[in-house]
Length: 288
Image (cartoon, rainbow, N blue to C red; front, side, top):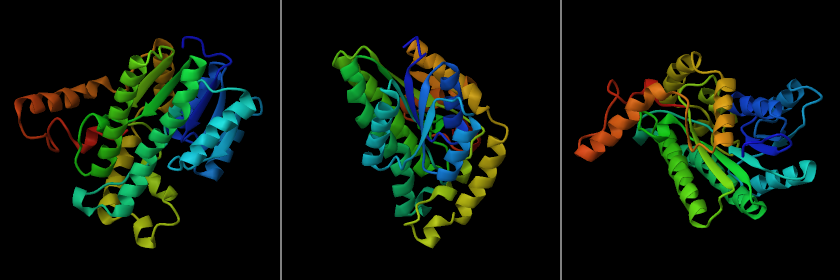
């Protein structure tokens, strides 16, 4: 899809970070944007901050709910007459040793990071196939191409996004849906608020589950410092726009981190043990 002017994009997690950067980039391309986020106040502020001339509509959405994701498609069709790009970008995180995560941790993170993407794929792919054009961008992470320590729930969710995207790419090719493109975004450190994701923990969780564990709180402090020196969301968004126009599948924002990925595949081929912190794979090079 080399021409984006006049097209319609749907972006989840659009109130801040990469999602807001993508919204700005799409508007600069002459697109209209449905901005979805679970955080209503932040979403309202983002819409207002884009200015009165921005062709956007904000929708509060829990991407783990398939009906609400269907509603994003319906909003795009109703307000703007179509949908041509979807970016399944909403994400949350938690940290700590693998055995310390509660069932609620798994349900929350997988619900947003993986099932949210599944819902976007399920909702928008048939529309794009029927109309003969469209592009699906799924936000994964460098943690979807490696296995940094103390990030098991997040890693599982992002590995799932990568393999879902790769399989979707193959499925579309097998059915001859040549007009539908797929990209998987695998960022490293980006200036986002993902390390503050507990602010959006479901209210139905117990008070204990809503509060981060000591291990998770410690991870939050470490990750917050690394994110502060990360890429600007607008720089990531520019790479995504280029990937859509050129039909590039893998969007690797930090190519200097690729030895972490190639080292992992080499160890698999050699039958060696996985890397650990302090080696090619470390917590300092994993979360996007």
